[in-house]
Each structure stands twice: as C-alpha cells, then as structure tokens.
Length: 144
Image (cartoon, rainbow, N blue to C red; front, side, top):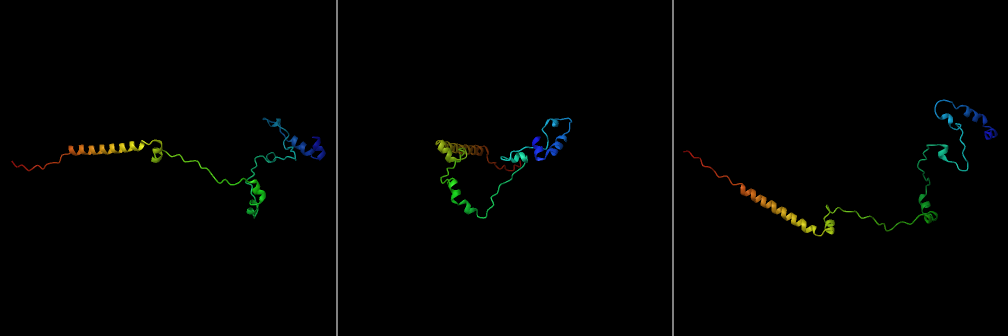
C-alpha cells in the first residue's frame, strides 16, 4: 500500500478495499477488487481486457504487388512447388471393371460364364412355359 501512497492513489485503494462486503460466498476471501498490477515491459492484452476478440488483422496498402514482389519478401518466402504429387483415387473393383480385371484376371471369364448361364436359364424356362401352354382348340357346336 506504500506504493499507492507515493503516487497519490491511496484513497482510491482504501475505497476499493472498504467496498468489499462480508456476506455469504467466497468473495470475501479474494484479493482487493479493482486493483490490478501489470508489468509495463510485457503487457498482456488478455489480462487487461479478458474475453477480448482481436478480430482479423488486415494489411492496408495500395501497392501490395510491389511489396510482395520485393526482394526482402521473396528471399524469405519458400519457392513454388512445381511437381505436386496428388494422391491416387482408390476405385471400387466391384463397380469398376478395369480395376477388377487388374486384381482378378479370371473375373472376365467368370462374368461371361455367368451371363451365358443366365441366358441359357431364361431360354430353357421360356421353352418349358411354351410347352405347358397348349393352344386352345375350337370346340364345334354340337346340337345333338
């Protein structure tokens, strides 16, 4: 408190100290309210204004191209990557025939055999149904 007496802020500190109420809760056990000490050599904005949002920093200059292309900036910036190696897209072998054939060359023969077998089944089923369906014969009017 001697520091506050030296700079003439002792009455304000006393007022802040006396304003604390002794009631229920933990507020009475805290430090003196209203007095914060901060080192001026290393000020922290979060301590001075807690909960502050700095926002987006902007560079305001009319001739940005000249600044970006200057030797000072270009000597620090890394060079442009010319050969960008992209990751190959994995293709589903069940949907992509070329990928399936690369993994399983026999898949072409198996697919052909299954298609031929299906066609044979359809053909035999049609023949069986045609045999069961006999054409109706006309019955003549018998007037006996």
